[in-house]
Image 1: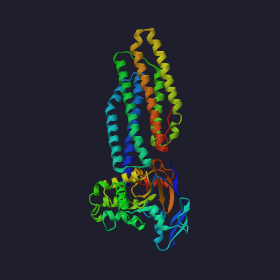
Image 2: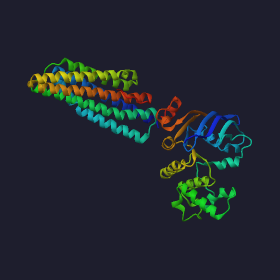
Image 3: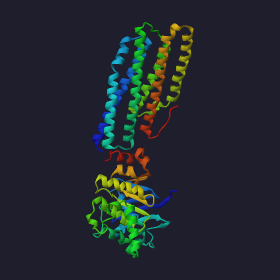
Image 4: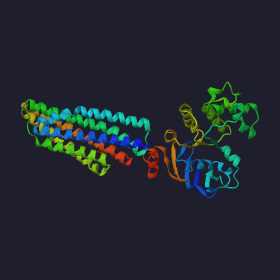
Length: 252
Length: 216
C-alpha cells in the first residue's frame, strides 16, 4: 500500500532577504522515488535539504511552513535534529567517504548511535554493503581505504553508510552527476532496489534520469513548485505550460 | 535539447507533410483513374509509388535519429511518436492507391472499363477523410476529425451496399465477374483507406492533447 511518508505544507524559505522557496506544498509517497527537477537556482536542492533540516547550518536561513514526518512537524522546536537525520539520510553530488577503511565508513554511524559489538557491526556492514550493491566488489578488502575505490564505488559506499543507521528516507542530491554512465546506471538500478525498503527523493539535472527511475516528479521554477505528479504524466503530457517548455528545452 | 533539435523536428514535419500531400494526390487520382478510365492518371499514380517508399524510409530514419540523440519529452515526444505511426498509415494508403490504379489499368487493358458513379462517390469520401486527417496533423486542429466515426461508418455502409449489388450482378451473368470482382476490391481498398485515416486522426488527437481516443 502506498501512502504519504512526508507532507510538505506551505513551505517558505529565505536566505537573508532572498526568498528561495515560495509556498511549496507536496507529498512524498512512501516506498516510491520522487524526483525534483528544474533549472539551476530553482530551489530543488534547497527543498531537498529542508527535508532533513540541512539548511539549519546556513547562517541567515529562515523557514516558515511545515514538513510533516510521522505526523510531526520536523520544524517544531521539540524535534531531535540528530534523530531526524538518522531517519532521513542524505547522499551528495560528490561522493564523500570518510578517509577511513571501507568497514569503518559503514560502522561510523552505528557506533555514534551506541552499537559497539563486533558481531553486530559485522552484520550491519555486510547487510548495508550488500544493499548498496557493492558487496561483490569489496567483500575481500573491507579494511582497504575507502579512498581507493572508484567514484561510483565511493558513491555506493556513501549509500551503504547512509543505510547503516536504518533510515526511512534517503535524499539524493544529484548523486550521479560526477559519475560515468556505467556507475550512473548502477546507482539508478540501486535506487530502484532501495525503494522496496526505503523512500527516495532525488534531485537531478538529468531529465532522462528523472523519467527513467522516478515514480513521481516535481518541477520547480524560481522557488515555486510548478507541477508535481506521476512521472509518466509529467513527461508525456504535463499540465502546466512552464513544465512543458522546460522539459522540451524551449526555456528562456 | 537544443534549438537545433526543434529546427530538425520542424524539417521532419515538413517531410511528413510532403509525403501526406503526395499520398492524398495519389489516392484522389487513382479514384479518378478508376472511375473515369483515365490511363494517364493511373500511370501517374504508379510512377509515384517509389517516392512514397523513399519518404517513408527517410522519415523513419530521421525520427529514430532524433529520438536516440535527443530523447525528447512531452509534446516533442508525442509529435515524433505520431510521425512514426502515421507514416505507416500513409504508406498503406499509398499502396491502396497503387492497387486501385493497377486495377483501373487492368480493366482498361481488357476493354472492360464501365463507368461506376458510386465508386467515385465512395472514393470522394475516403479522399476527404485522408485530406482532413492530414490537415489536422499539419494544423493541430482536431475539430477536423471529430466526425470521423460517422464518416467511417458511411464508408463501411457503402462497401456492403456495393458488395450486395456486385453479387447480384455476378449472379445474373458470369460475364460480369471480372468487372465486379475488381470493383469489389477497390471498394475494399477505399474502406481500408478510411480506417487508416481514422488511425491517423487518433494519433493526431494524441499528439495535440496527450490523450488517447478510439474512433469507432
